[in-house]
Amino acid sequence: MQQGNTTNTTKQQQNKSAQQNAGTQQSTDENVKAAHEQAEADIEQDPDLNSEPDPTADLDEGEIARLDNGNN
Image (tube, rainbow, N blue to C red):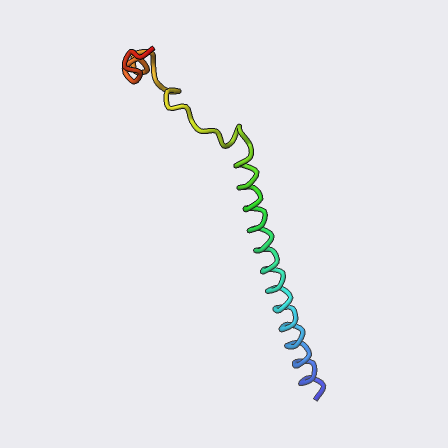
């Protein structure tokens, strides 16, 4: 009988541990999601990380002149 009680107690402890781990995993997932959302918001606010690229940045003078059509 002692052995049966020990087995039941061990199973109960394992179940409790599994439930705690599931709760911890859910909490961790929520923290990761919140951190990701905060990082996205921070990136949107940082001009160095969220600047619109200059369409003429990689063009040489001839290509820029063709785009401008001599309107300078």
